[in-house]
Image (tube, one colour):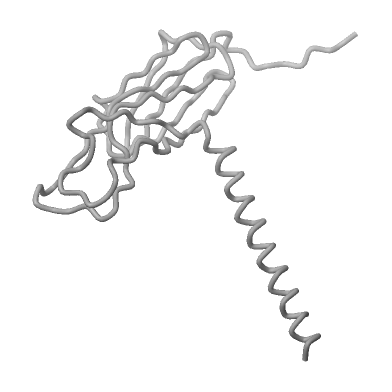
Length: 167
């Protein structure tokens, strides 16, 4: 009976170890993949905390997930900006760095309510994205649809990269 109990304890210990390793791996992947998407939101004085909230102030950090895709002729950047209007965004290119800034405004449907969960961040933000190539900023275009900003940046040399033989 004691051996059976030891074996059960060992199995439980192994399962807990595997679960912990899996959880740790998930956190490592989230941090490595999402670290650039982690964006700080700066609150104005009037938005320091929701009126009648039982919780802490608005979150100051949120994920603005994005992707950078390169084709033969352009760099395409897509950035998720849920709950924002295109008029509240500004896009700037400086060298091979893209800056997307804006402000996400808090919206309340009722002022006689109490928040129980507050996970959405509000305020002004700036997201910086390094571009893999130089681009023609003056020929860039941007569109906003369904909460996703898509920015097309023509590559400065427009050529496909090619392998240079070593002699």
